[in-house]
Length: 112
Image 1 (cartoon, rainbow, N blue to C red):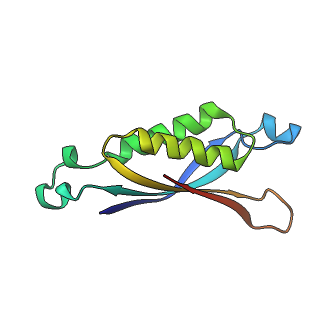
Image 2: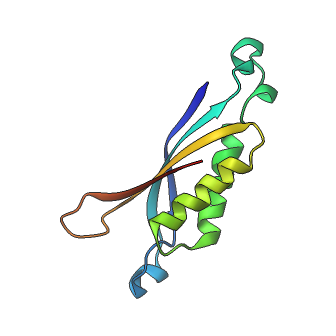
């Protein structure tokens, strides 16, 4: 079964330029997780990923990491997902808007 978490907003330090290192910027994080389908039958949180707790962990990890590159931010988010023992496989997309004038956004996708 695939559990998708779409549009997690994370305000954090992200970027290489000196002015980016002193202000918060917003990242969008989208996640798709392959998990057992036991909760579809049991209807119990214990049988699946607690995605409220997982999104809190992703947000905290990205805030603490103060990444320079969205590539690194995607790896940080992926590692948080993979640390959950109920996750069999994870796909993470990190998007940063407004990085370059005239460019809507830049994104990186990782899976593992």
